[in-house]
Image 1 (cartoon, rainbow, N blue to C red):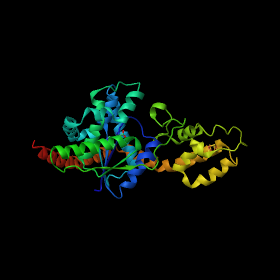
Image 2 (cartoon, rainbow, N blue to C red):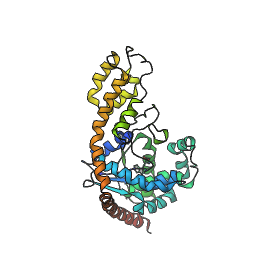
Image 3 (cartoon, protein in one colour):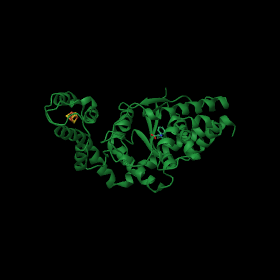
Image 4 (tube, rainbow, N blue to C red):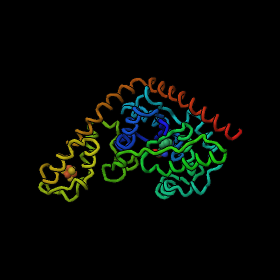
Length: 326
Ligand code: TRP
Ligand code: SF4
């Protein structure tokens, strides 16, 4: 496997603890070992937010600030904005010529979104092609691996299928199969035990102040059977405990003992959890503040990123067109 990685996030809102635990930590660690390309997937955001596209650009910049604050290092990784490298669309168009409709219509993420998203109309030509653009993202950089959550596996499968079809059609070996690198902590639930999402308003954002974090943690749902302080609790069914697992793992043993033997109450348990979370967030706050004071630095990082990304993209497109005789 080659040592290049590409991953992306859609800029549809502020980043929260779920992004930190699910994707960013993974990205940060991978920087040491791989040549990493991290992309703001603004075209992908547009496919869902086409009725209100005016926030995509500012969310994108805000997300990049969070990436940098969390530890994505522009000296090690290439950080760029998808729409600033036009080759993504060019390759998507070429792929769309031979991607069978059936493959896209059967894609489980597509079917699920059509079923579940009620606030926007996703019965569009563009949204059907979402995975084709994602395949173009990945194959344009010839990424050997793609760090993603489990929900993205069907898109990776489609990416491999599209790459293979290209090779077969044009009798070439331009593309090879990218592998998934799955995130360690697949899903962090929100404060109310539903999926963490800005649309449920149940997330702790990386940009939340200390007071807000404490308040949000204190509102978390705990073991419903534990009503009185003297009731013994069941940490394994308590979302607070799963947060400890991610944000303060050394305390897990103690928490289990405190909870199962009714040594401390849930209020106290949550207070200690906020302290653990804040410990993790404080350096991020600090760096976030520094970056926000100098927006020109962010623009420079993105300009450098675009240049590096564009060089790779142009090279792949030359090979693609040559293989096709265009
Ligand atoms: N579809 C991904 C998501 O919603 C975002 C994305 C776009 C992506 N292009 C990508 C992820 C390429 C990995 C590789 O999370
Ligand atoms: Fe959950 Fe902690 Fe309460 Fe146990 S003590 S139920 S782990 S909040």
